[in-house]
Length: 318
Image (cartoon, rainbow, N blue to C red; front, side, top):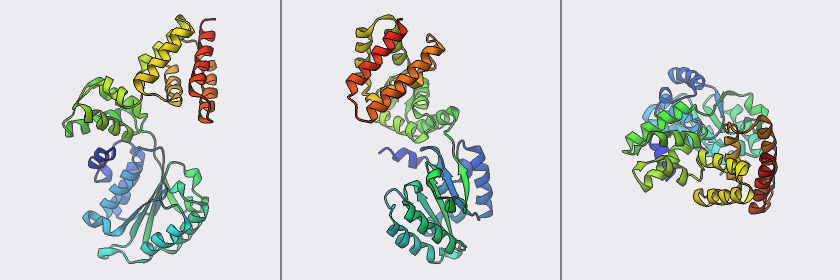
């Protein structure tokens, strides 16, 4: 379900991609020439890497692009045998329909083992005349240097809030969803530059009601609104431990937050809280990092969050 609207509204050509201006300008040159080297797309999830690869392939091959494209998710087929069989077999066959080369798109290529990457490097070298590779990854540092040196590297950045907001409203209009203005802002806020997350949040909320409000977005995305987090901090400052702890339990229960979710969201809102001093924000950031580490390592959620609340109350009321 979550990929349905993403796929339905995916750009069909490179020049239709929103944001990533520097990347798009370079890709348009490749699409016009119908020729390009091996490519490496690196960047956070939901920023358009797969979309760019598919759009470029369609621009080069037209409607028959599937015949000259092998699309693989490297996290599913990360072993050496997959590279030696599937990839090599596809690379060694002639392109279809008179095309000068074929394309192999490896999504999440940073999941490949070092042995598999070594075999891939050799295949890229052997079949460079008739096959082009497009590798997509979140962390280019996990791709071995011999592969990086054979590719033109494209760095994708988190999308700007304006681009996310515009695309969310475009999709809502196309799908017949009545989206409140502050709901669009909420989707932009929870996305943090990840358009896929924003569209998934919109789709989940629209499944409940085609009139999507700000409250629905926060309640269905396991995200607390900024004012609720600010109220928790103010309770720590003004009302004492027991009142702040009650406020914390209400937040966790109402919005379905896990302990790490709460700590991360509170950290993001910390720097917009004007009633806190700079020194307090620095101390609180250090405490949140410590509690987050303990939670990830398996510490008890309730006692860790209560300990964080106690430290906040002690510091803010002193």
